[in-house]
Length: 109
Image (cartoon, rainbow, N blue to C red):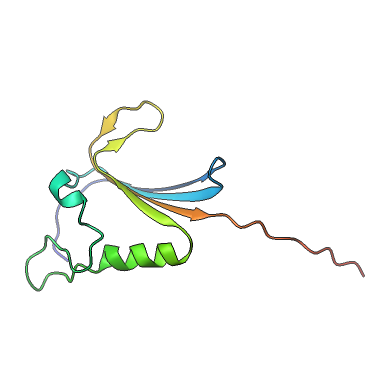
């Protein structure tokens, strides 16, 4: 993998009670994804890398796996801070997965 410099990568999770979803966020503080590319990043075989440097399947496969689990993946670039509503440099991917209420069984001896 080609070294591209240093930056900050943040992984966080939270529960969204309104939508009954677990939200996992992966966020960086890089230069972001240009808007002309943003609409295509989940397309199979779409890549901005040189020939031989990537197949363009990573996000497409991830999208399919998340959908198969009843969830969705959203991308935000630039990022809007949830608390301050300020724009932050970088990109965030939000994986939203539904929670399942599991019925517990009490076992008594």
